[in-house]
Image 1 (cartoon, rainbow, N blue to C red):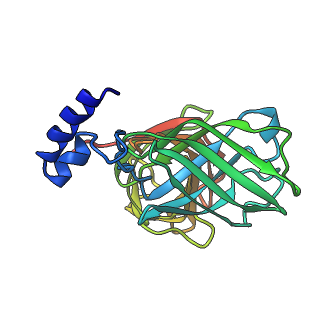
Image 2 (spheres, rainbow, N blue to C red; image 1 turned 30 degrees about the vertical axis):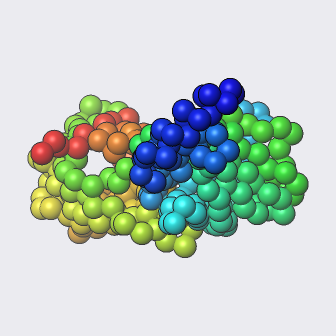
Length: 269
């Protein structure tokens, strides 16, 4: 850098106020300063998964993440019954995002150390170029696994869909759900609400929803009363506008039945 350029730059910087000075890249060392990270990992229900062989014994886990004062904390659990740790065994992750929005989270799992890393999206709801790895312990990986890391918005609102069985019997189910804002000790969320089943004598009135769980991109709920009930399980879209019921089972005085795949869609306001 020539003396003439340095003098001109110094004169320009001297004429700026302090906030503008740093925004313009003026500093004593003559280098451009980096703005602090402005993206926060959204608080809520997250899922981390991988189809890689290295993650076969730890393929998917979920729970809540919270960001406060730049520090990220999470309470999570596995979703797979064949994983190296039981779904009822919660574990903690902690970390932060650097000035390039690269998130690094670590925590103990089954005698080893789990590390998750990826670049936080501008909306704070997902990580791209994400990987996770477990070093040591019962869940140790042979190498880091490519991962999908996604926030799932709350299942809240009015949802409607058709439940059909193998005999072609169809019932329209409308449900009003409200997802809890805080999780349980393992990072699971719950649903409160009611359901209405049209043209079905087994459910002549609006019935309560019970035995619910939401974790990552999966859900389960039961609706029923008077000795009859239906339990539905499935997955849902990240924006929570569509619930995909992958299976349902009914029981009670009206008889047992099993259902086909169906979709429930949230009504738009």
